[in-house]
Structure formats: C-alpha cells, structure tokens
Length: 400
Ligand code: SF4
Image (cartoon, rainbow, N blue to C red; front, side, top):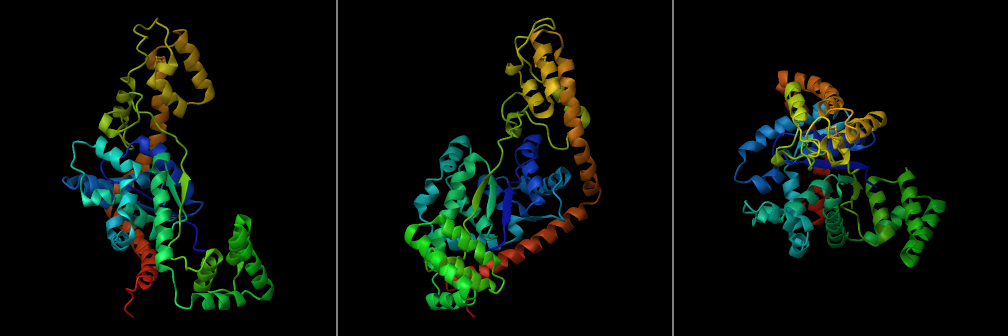
C-alpha cells in the first residue's frame, strides 16, 4: 500500500478570516502532526471563477501562506506549495479528462449551485465544468489516502474515487500480470503465501471484507516484497489489475462554523468577517458594534441570548461559567451588552496574538515565505513525478 497521506487546498481569492481558521485551519494543524500532510494554494482553482480578475490571485497567494504559517501550520511537519508550480497536476487533469464521462462532471451537485450563486459571472466555461476533475487530479497525483472535507464536498471525493477506479480498470492491465502476481505470492514465503491465497479466495468468492483487510495488513508487514510486487499483490487481491491511483477517503471535518458579526456564516462577501490578523482596535470596534437581540432596546430590557449573534460567539469562545453568566445576566437585564461582549473581545484578541507574532517575521522578511514555498514545491513535484511516471507508462506514453 502507498503511505498514508492527507492533501488539502484553499483558493486564494481574498483575505483569510477567523471562519477559515475555525472551519479548516485548526483541523490542518491537528492533522499535520498525525500524518504526512500536503497543503496547497489552489491558484488554478481560483482562476476557474476569477479568470477575468486574476490580479487578486498573486497577492492573496502570499498573504494566504503567511496566514497559514501564522495560524500554526508548521513547514517542518507539513508540505506547503502552490498548485501551478507543480505542472504535473495539469498533466494528470488532462489525461484523466480523456476517460471521464461528461455526465459525471455535470451531475456534481455544487456545479449547478455555484452557477446559480455566482449568477453575475459567466461560468459556462470549460475550466469551470472541469474543476472537480482538476480537484480529483490534485488528490490522485499524491496518492492521498484522506482528504479533509465538509459535508458539501463529499460528492467530489466520491467522484474522485470513481475516477481512480475507472483509471485502474482501464489502464491497470499489465502484460503477464497473473504470472507476475503468482511469482510475487511465492516471495511471501510458503506459510504467508497460502494464507494470502485463502484470504483472496474468501474475498473474491464470498465478498469477505475482513479477509480483504487481513490480507492488506499482511502485505503491509511483508518486508520481503519490493514496492512493485506489493502493489501487484494489492491489485491481485481485488481482481487482476495493478492499483496505479489510490481511492481516497473523505475525512469529514467537524462542522465548527464560526458565525460572522451578524450571525450569518462568516464570509468576506457578507461584510461580517474578522480577518485572521486584523488590528486589535478594529477587532474591538467590530465586536462592540455588533448587532444584539433586537428586543434589548434599553439597558433595562431583558434579552434572549439564543436570538443574539454575540451569544453565538460566546459558544465558540467562552467556557461554561461565562456562558451561564450571559444567559442569566441577559435574561434578567443584569448585564449590559457592552459588558457581555468584553469576554468575546478578550478571547478573540488572545487567539490572534500568537498569530500576529508569528506573521511578523514573515512580513519583515518575505524571502522566508518564498523559501518555504520553494521547498514545498520541490517535495510535491518529487511525489507527483513518481505517480506520473506510472500513469504515463500505463497509458502508453513512457517512450522508453
Ligand atoms: S446581553 Fe449579550 S446575549 Fe444579551 S442581547 Fe446583549 S450582547 Fe446579546
């Protein structure tokens, strides 16, 4: 089996805000110490919707990488790179497009939604229709085992899995595969070889998933096998094909959605966001002027926290005793709204403080950011190159 890997990207289309931090970056930070992670700036994806306004992309790309580093992405643990600096993504996208039925792309639910949501833009483009396939290439090129996604992105991962399966089916045929697999089985040693064949039969004849898992675990442990023999035996377990591309799993991220200053989802386009490294005074002013429960016209009017956007922020930022204090104090008019907002202001500023500090060194010396990205691009290209060598060979494009 290929090593466990996580791949995820973000589109550089503007400043990052605390909604991004709570919705995605905190997960990335957790994952980077658990698994090999590759995080990329999806600049080609940004072009699918911003093809007529590319000026924003370059600046947002560098700002975004600084935001990632400020938030706690650690380049010594995770690989940070820019999608367009690894042109193999485009090559795989093109090759996958040869065998991807058009209907698969048209039925991706977010395709129609996005066209409706962004009605002011002409998205009847070839690039926009193909963006889920480009996303598939972004993941498959690293043989990623997991992709962190929200609920709405699960269909994209499903399609990525179908594309990998179809590719392996079409191109995983290897001349003399059965014989090469049989020779690889012998290399397991007689006891393991017998067990492998029994488990294979149990899976292929009775669909025994446990047998499949057991056989895979055995192959993972079989130090006597070369990489290529191991892959052959993985493919042989399930059929008679080599597994060239890996079917990734969706790793559902916790739905921690930070509400914006007006209670709706935090989004730059709603004008209700606090950016990741926003100035302290601006953060304080924005929270102080947030709307509250409309029933609290006067200080003496009792309110209802469940109708108030400030309380939604307390649910993210405050501990249980503080939330109790708000519930009681608001409903009895025992506290005023400014008083109620102060713990949120303090918590947001405290959360941002280390981010501002970490960002400063990169703002002072942008060459540090360039160097991190250059290293990341090199690592990513090396991994992408390995996959493309197998893909080209499988599709008859090796020209050796
Ligand atoms: S006291 Fe707090 S929860 Fe109640 S209305 Fe004012 S800001 Fe909202």
